[in-house]
Image 1 (cartoon, rainbow, N blue to C red):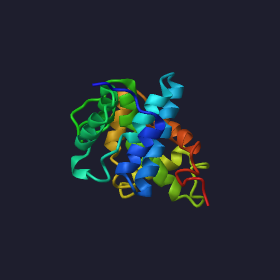
Image 2 (cartoon, rainbow, N blue to C red):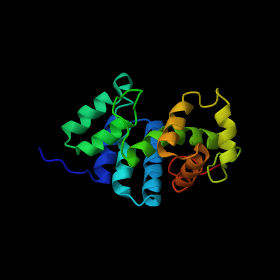
Image 3 (spheres, rainbow, N blue to C red):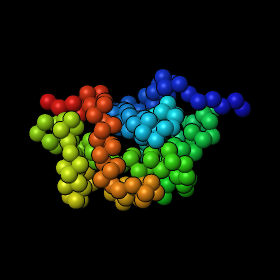
Image 4 (cartoon, helix red, strand yellow):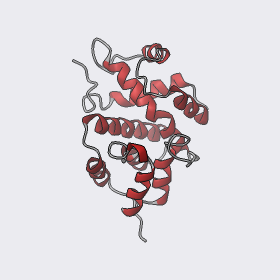
Amino acid sequence: MDTRPPTRDEAFWLLKEFNHTDKAIKHALAVEATMRHFARKRNHDEEKWGLIGLIHDLDYEQFPAEHCTKTREILTARNYPPDYIHAVLSHGFGLCSEVEPTHEMEKVLFAIDELTGLVSAAALVRPSKSILDLEVKSVKKKWKEKSFAAGVDRSVIERGAAMLDTPVDSLIAEVIEALRGIADTIGLGGV
């Protein structure tokens, strides 16, 4: 079986085949932008990291009870490279997958997936509704409010930060920086 990396367009159309809500698409774009940001900063393959971020939740909207399991089936059927599949599945380690993040890229994905949601939510409750004026301290304040973005598992973010040997505050700063580059695309450009 011949496997080849997808193009960005192919990955985006696959994402849209299985995800139809604005929320799911914006989350995928946020994770893609953040992964690209980290790849650039760490001198890795930005295209690969971005594509993996883009499709990481491929099955979540249609198959939430089979999250990660369906993604494996979908990507395998479309001849995605095994390392792409492994990376995507690793973001659910201990939650919906037993695939452990081992590569730096996988650890970054594990750490920032939930964090992009928290950062986005923190931006949306600002008077400006913008990430452009969001600061780390504002996100940390919201972090402590367990009822705020209650679906965001802070322990996953902490585990990811530990895997990367990076302080959570540094990860937050990097996610903010990454999302500023696509603020308008993901609805965080402000009012």
